[in-house]
Length: 160
Image (cartoon, rainbow, N blue to C red):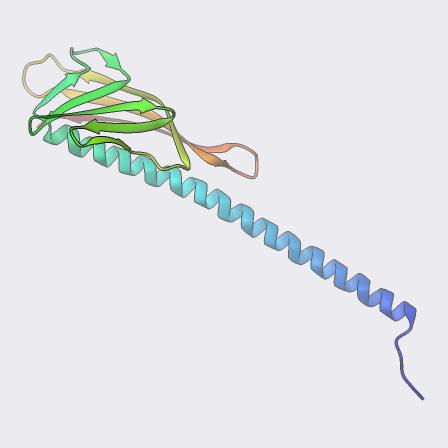
């Protein structure tokens, strides 16, 4: 006598298999969401740390600050003289750019946007002045809640 699967057994098997596939799909989707959120958060944090360190490095080695020009003045551009060469940081299309004698360079990565870049000169002009810097970084990638990863950055750096 031949043993064969009945239609009922086949339907039960297909039902169990489809439930199993739905569960695996949900797990896979959740792991992709976590990876995207992690990538967005990491990108914003790395870009923020890079910009802070680069700006601090350039400010500390600068011989002069040309913009902002006076104590208490706030601008959206930072111009420094380093080794006789003017280095200008400015916001262009949600990207922080550095312009010097070699050209113009993007300082942010393509998956992060920068806004509200402001520089305030502190001090009386006697001795070493300092600069207060602030900006907001926003990830292009959104979280599962539908909001982008955002980081507000601010610091104060003095000339040496």
